[in-house]
Length: 250
Image (cartoon, rainbow, N blue to C red; front, side, top):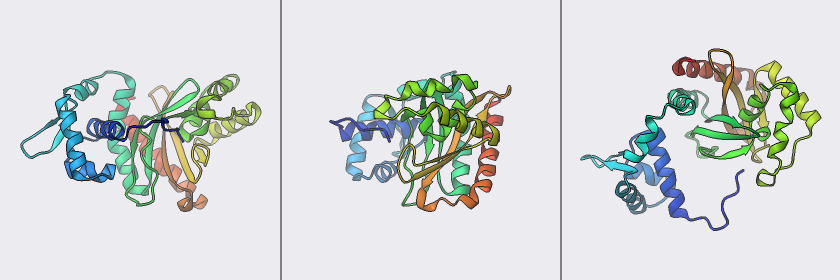
């Protein structure tokens, strides 16, 4: 799990989370924001008003908040990651509705894996949003999937992330064997690597030429993970990944 700053400022964190919700999920009310953040409505209202003041949000006549001019700039980004995320979000929501667990979309940058989209499940006990978080690639299901796409002699790229948040470097021999197995089976399982008590299962999302662009995963508390359901879960993930691929236009 990513370590929070030593002197975390809760109000800044709340404001950034609201901005992320507006940009990635759309319209938001004060009640919605208060519930998602676990704060009083008066607090959520003050945060939203500050975002309006700085043009990160706008408010309509019905008192609903929308992404403001600053956040809308990113909506027009032509980057592959921005297009992929936009294409994935509706299919990730359907995936969450079907499996009842949180869903994530992950890309790899060198030895790290970045969560570019997260949608939480409705369970009281659930894996919360990982949006924006960065982990060593070998410690996430999506990162393992993307490392498995590399040539066998490049798998040691994961060693470069050994200093991330005090993470232990992987054993190269064991990692190469694991990546070969992931490549063969077409999915990855992460049982407690990134966070104790959390299990994630992921499959790749591919471009038209077969290149893996991202990893699509579902994460759940380990108490709800049932290994006997793994084949059905993997099949559901592949179906969602295919829908994302089609929506992204390869």
